[in-house]
Length: 487
Image 1 (cartoon, rainbow, N blue to C red):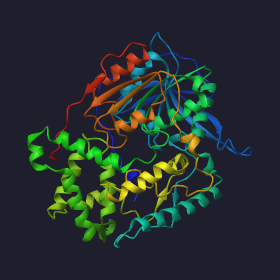
Image 2: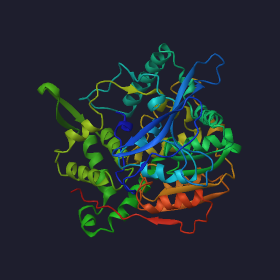
Image 3: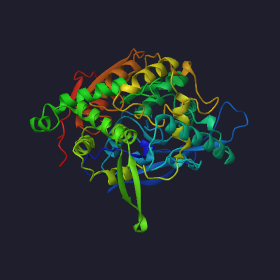
């Protein structure tokens, strides 16, 4: 089971229908003019690419492409190019800009301050040249699973995929955050500028923080949302438990929801204990009229919960309903949830970029000890960043080491946006990740989750003030809580 496939998103539009077709701009290298479309909106842009070494630690390394789309600046104050760094790892910057009703309005708004660049990081989107690995390893669909069994099967798949990618001419050791940070510096040189402004979310902030160690003097500003520290690839299970307590406090603000869910933690523990003792046999219909029996177990429920808690306004109400249904022996939702979570896929498939980046960033030994201590009694165990930490050090020489995982120290002006109900990168952890940044402005988005950029126009206003070098006096933005009752 790979919970990265159970994706969540935000469907908020904060700008009217607009077109920008008359912006003239010089081009760089092999750039070509395109008409970039996001739903019904269209804008003139430039698509370009650069070649970078797949593994700079290997003098015989091949080169691989990095593709980007550049939206030329519209304002009079044209500062450093603003490079968008997607999360994941594995997200496409170009696709993020293309999604209708997603972040396209923010891409357009930031053009006031410089060129805005949607980058497909190495191995993602249009920069992807290495095929996905479909291993021969699989978890049984209708047998009891243990944590050790899951780890064993996934580590076998990792070794198989490592060999597969090598046969395709790819160097897995090149898919690390450090290599991606050097890619950003190569992009800067290609654009013929002294500095870049880095704008990232989730894993994109992980890359931005790593870039401080590679090209600090060439970074003008950083905009970080839902920050993930360099030693935070795997989140602490106890922090996830604390999130559920904050979620309960939010639920308590809604009398009807509080009446239905007076004790979320108790509900989760009760359901997990129930299906640990008696897993649920679910009949899943397949194409062609066939049916398969699937044994739904505690690890599946933990993985689904880990994937659905990122944003309170998207899937949390559905998750609560699912727990309540199982608690009351109602399983009508399970077939669709199991399919959507990718649990029916016959074999384990892995993508070289997300696979390599996570294993390379790894976990410090001190953090690993904490995770092992906290996981057994925690609500989601080790499932929040699955398949990590199960794949920790699965590939020799890929781990970047503790020097990489140390906190960066820098005075680069940085804006940090944190959601109080972020179910993936927790506020306390974000503050720890950025503790070495001396020129840091923290803005809390109350009641927002992980994907917070578009929850309020005030987020855009705050980012624009930061880029305009204006003081930010309002350090809290409030987002209206969604209903926690699944309609």
